[in-house]
Image (tube, rainbow, N blue to C red):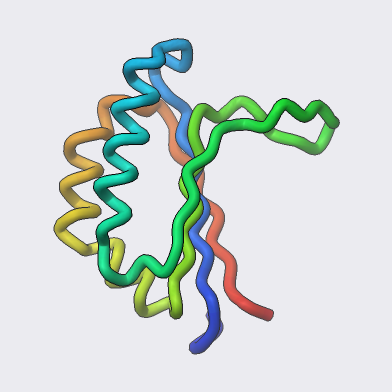
Length: 105
């Protein structure tokens, strides 16, 4: 793992009730609160784009893309009380989570 440079942590959520706008909004609200973690450099909350090609995954409900200054900052985020509270309060909303982490080359 790179010692320096940007660390990207991209999380994809599949909701238990993917057609529930209330559940989507609860998750988005939780992610916005989560964005107050001090080590997060920047973040983006998204939904699947209206694109259709064989290589595009669109079955998820919400994505959460985080940018950190370093792997150490991302490690700190994982144990931050705000992150732990988010998981505890929102985990009932999702059926599946997939994470892609990447670092500068």
